[in-house]
Each structure stands twice: as structure tokens, then as C-alpha cells.
Length: 450
Image 1: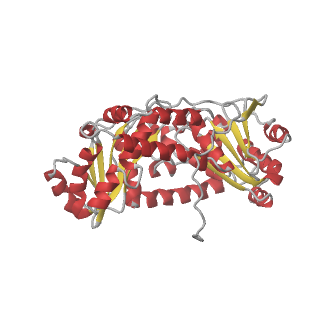
Image 2: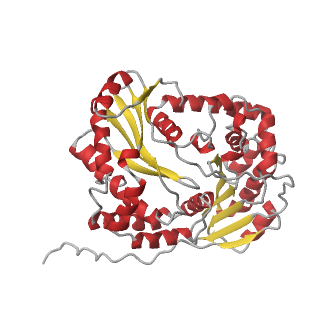
Image 3: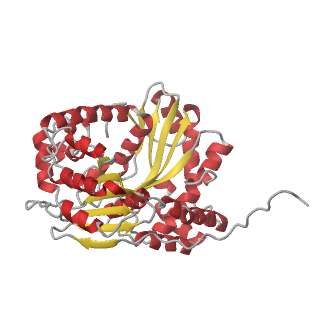
């Protein structure tokens, strides 16, 4: 008789659903969502401000980023470094960031110090000092970051592609943190004026996730109940539109590899075809043995990896191939991409759709297994104008996808012949081969914007 232990039986996964919150509102207009997750003793709290980057004055783009970065540099109750000392004293981590559709403030803290951390979060958003010296320091750091980003080939490709695919009049076509020409003009007075104009409780949502008890609503009321901004203004959300097809080659002299972006304007999470499109994108370029990676990495050896990426906005979005290739194979790789993306000629198979479905459905419980996972997901949904019921609805949508429906959506949204191309690499080596392959690219100098 074998002494080897018998393998355990593989059982079907248990039923799972995204947690639903207890919701209430404070008298000042702040919406609150409490997600009780037993056993999660590190609590994640996020404050979503309905403050899109479209609120920034054109000449001062970057002011929202500088505001977010100086929220923890001192408040009326905790001047100077006293605020950060107080955050450390309660074992918390504080962070603030801006997105094209909203501004977020986060605190992660042990449950035993939640009251103190929530109070500090309220202090930071309601009465930050935003001193000139702090803004000056963050501006200098941010300008250095912008320079570093644009010197990085993959990030340069991402920035140019965004400008190439979205009409320039929209804020979403430009760098999230602002560009050097506008950031360098932002003063402390500008940051304080922006905060006074747009940061307030109306339209904001506080999300708290963790092992919560009945005292938490009172902690929230104590911290945020007195927050007010009678002069709070509101900015309209953008509805970006695409540009016509463009083909750009950004010169990076001497580079031995090139970064490629090839894509098209597509849809956002609220679109009825989102579940079908997610399945399609995963099958084309989301898995290691997806169509793109199987051919360009495994068969051709052109790259370490290539992906198809969805970048949904609050309204609309864009989807693009992302990869780095050796200079000598760029023209061939780029010429292969339209055929690999042409699902009209090669429809999805039942096996491709099922593998994508199993992954996207199966990964959800892992994505949302922690308090931080639930909080981050909810903040993303709020930025998109969606609620907590969306995750379960999306999973149900995945179950309805068929090879035919995925093929139909992808064939409309990813027309190979109409895609915008951006290549960042050595123009002297690439311009000729790309032209010979039928890609009539416009060459941009390394420091040239479009």
C-alpha cells in the first residue's frame, strides 16, 4: 500500500459577493460608507472628493497635485511637523493623491487608533496650513519628477500616447500632475485659493473598511461633523473625445530598444459592453499566453512581454498595446500587431473566453480580501461615478459573455486599421523601416510635444 498521502479533492469555490456597506450621511453633506470586515484589524479609510482635474485653471495645471502633497505638512491644530508626528504616534500611514476624476485621501491605521487617525484625516482636509515654504518644496520636487518621467522611455510613450489619442482641449489629455510650464507658476497662494474654492464635504464620500464596531459612526461624526465650506464650488466632469488617427515616432537617439503604444479610443466601466470587452482584452493581451504574448514573446522572441491595457476614464477611455522591443525588430513587431488584434478575421474561441472568464471571476475574491483592497476598489468606483453593487453586477456580466459577444465588441472598439501609434526610440534606425512597412510616422524631437 502506498504511503503517499492522498491528494485533497478540489472543490468548487464557495459563493462570494462584494461586501455591501452601511451607509449614512452627515448633516454637512458628507456621505459615509462603513464596510464591516471581521478580522481585519488594520482599518483602511479613504475620502473621495468629487474634485476632477478639470477644476484646475489652465495656466495653473498641477495646483491640485501640489495641494494634495502638502495636506500633511501642517494644519491649524497640528502646525509644521506636528501633524506627521501625530500620524506616526497612532501607527498610521497617510496619503493623498489626485486623479483625473477625483482627489483621494487615505489613512491606514490599527483599529485601536482609528478615532485619532480619522480626526487627523479630517484636520488635513478641512484646515491644512498649505504654507508657502511647503508648496515651494513640493513644487521643486514635482518639477524634478516631471523631468525624470519624460526622460523615461515607457513613461514618455504613455504621455505622448495620451496626447495623441485624446483631443487637446480636455484636461485628461495632459499630465495628471501638470506640466513643467504650468507647475512652475503655482504659488502657495494659488494652492490655498484652490483648496478654499473646491474642498468641502458636499459631494465627498468617506469609506471606512475593517473590523468595525458600533462606535465608528460616532467617531466619524466627531471628526467630520463640523467640516464646512460655505463657498465650496463644483467643477463639471469632462467627456473627452478622441482625436483622429495619428502616427508618431519620438526620437530617442542611441536607444537600443523602443517603447510602443498602439491603441484606440474605447469605453468606460459603465458601458453595457464592458464585461464583454474585459474578456476580449484579457484573451488578446491580458494573460501570459494571450494572443499578443504568445506570438511576439514566445514565438518571435521580440520582447520580454507585451500587454493590451484598458485605461477607462469616467466617461470613455482608451485601450492600447504596451511593449518594449529591440530596435531591429520594431517595424516587424508593429506590422504584426494589427493582424493579432483583428478578431473579425480570427474570432474568439470558446476556450479563450472561458479561460478569461475563470481568471477575471476567480481573482475577484483575492483582490478584495483585505480592508485595503475593498477601500481602494470603492474609491476607484466612486471616481467612475459607480457604487458598491457594481462589482457583483460585473461578475454576473462576465458569466453572460460568449465568444460571439466578445468578438462583436472587440471588432468595433479595436479596428486595426484606425489605431493611433506612438513609438519612442532611435529615429535614425526606425523611421526608414517603419515607413517601408507602411507606417507613415511623424518624427518628433525628444523634447517636442504634440
